Every structure is written in C-alpha cells, then in structure tokens.
Length: 420
Image (cartoon, rainbow, N blue to C red):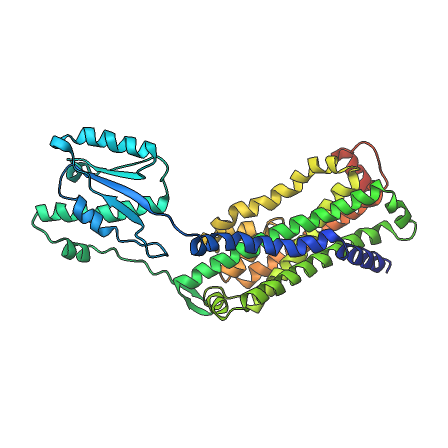
C-alpha cells in the first residue's frame, strides 16, 4: 500500500522540524512557568508593610480591632503598622480630612473610618489610594466583623463566644458514589481537574494537528510538490497518508508530554504524594483518552483536509476554519454543564453527537460511570461519521488537490464529490 510511504514521509519529515521540537518542549515549559510564577511570588517575593489608621467615632471598637491585626511578614515584621489618631476638641471631620490628605501624600496607606451608627448601619469606610488589594481588604473585613458583632451582642446581654459556637455554619461534605466506592470531596476536586486537563489537551491537540494537515496540503499545493507526489501515489493514498502520518506525530507529542509530566511529578516525593491523593488516573481513562483522540483526530483532520484541498492560500483557509473550529468550541462551553450532571438526558444526547463526542464523552467517562451502551453507541456513531466524512473528503481531495485560483463555492464542492 503506497499510503505507507506517505505516512513515513509525513512522520519523519515533520518530527525533524524545528517547529515540532520547539513546540513539544516549549508547551510544557510554558505551562510549568504559568503555574510556578504565582507560587514563587507567594514564597519568595517579600511582602510589604501596610500603614493603617483607625478613626473610631464610637470610641468602642478601635482598640479591639487593632489588637486583632497580628499578621506578620516572612521576615517577622508586623504586616500592619497601625495608628489610633484622636481628634483635637472632638472634631472628627477635621481629623478625617487631614488623614485623607496624608493618604494622598503617600504617608498613609489605609484609613478605616468607623461611623457612630455602625451598630445600626453595619457599614465601615475603607479609604485608600492604592491599596485595594483583596487580601488586605479581606483582613480588614474579617477582623472588624467579629468586634462589631461582639459589641452588638454584649448590648443585648449575650456572650459572643457562646453565640458564635451555637451558630457555627454546617459544612456540606460532598461524597460521590462510584463503582470504585465512595469518593471524598478532595477526590472529587481531583476528578474535576482531571476532566478539565484531559478535555483541554484533547481540544488543543485536535485543533493543532487538524490544522497541520490543512497547512501541509496548502504548502505542498503552493510549491507544486503535490503534483510530483501524485505522479507516484493515488490521491486516496496521499490523503490517508497525510492524516495518519501527522496523527501519529500528534500521539508521539502527547506521549512525550506524558513522560515529561511523570518525570516532573515523581521527581519529588511530596509532589508525588499530593498528586496521588487528589488526582487518580486509571488505565481505562488513559485508553479512552487515546481512543477519543484518534477518533476525534480522524474526524476533524478529514474536515480540515477539505479546506486544504479547496484553498490555495492560508488567507482563504482562515475564512473557512471557523466552520470547523466552532463545533470544537461548543463542547468546551458545555463541559461544565456536563460535569455538573453527567448522566442527565441533555448530557447523554450531547455526548452522542459525533462532533462533540470526543470531548464530552471523555468528560463523562472520567467524571462518572456512563452506561456501557452509551459509550459503545457514541464510538459507533463516531466511527460511522468518520467513514462518511473520509469518503466525502477523499473524493473532494481527489479533485480539489490540483485546483488553483478562485476558491470554489459549496455547490461546486458537491459537484466535485459527484464527479469523483
């Protein structure tokens, strides 16, 4: 079968390209950097002190509030430098104006202004110029709330600690029943992360390698190399060779990424322990990922090959790509709906639509235990769709591969199909 020669050519030529080597190495490195920068920022970037002035018009809250701000930085310094300014002759408005001016001059970071009616209104002013950091505001909010509530309860003759203990919120400990047993909340989070990672990897690889088939056809059409190749092989063999050769390259890239991920994960015993406790990947899930990658790739790459066959330039192809890319985006948009209720009628129906099956059925397999007939039916429908698309694509490819000039319309493409 001459398609084997095309498969070898596409695979070996593409795997030696600098673009493949760079993308294979660069993608996990960039992902690692994206995750590492926030961690390094937290652990290695020193924090800064925040100067806070508390203007208490009630005279009851400031002392308790300031004493609760006991946070420290990594070097042991207090995180908050606090001050309790007192007005001259009881003129709070004049003092507030002076403190606001101090903030404007940069000598003060935050002013907490507690009004006289705070017990009734429940509102405290947080005034700052630059320090609208969520962590700082959360600290202020979390420390002043108990102080004000404590004074409210004391005014009604109730003890804050006792009331707080009796009104403690009840936590809902989510547990999921699966064939493998009951999963705790942390394991559910691990499942959710695994679904998102699997689906996003599948989406990116299907898109990138499907478009690689399209680009390869357009490049060889533009350089007339395709005419030389067609003198030695049938259009059908060339069509299958390109799809299978570049698909094998995609599997190679995924295998390299998987080995790099395992090497990084298990290089540290702590990282390995955390990984094993929160994310569990079963061999069945890996098999399903490979199956749906292969089937999804065959489906979408066949469609992309039509674009490559009917277009002469990348500019023409970009105008048609949205027809293929849009059905790939829909499963991403619906993924969280499927995760929330993976066995609902809507989730089952959507996962049986061939264009959505690779991503949505994979999500259902990882997050739940769908009926075997549903998984089997989705694969059968996907295979039938692939056969139909490949049959259509191969015929259009046979005619369009040697067509140059104006991009054909939809009617002409169907005319090519009937002619072939």
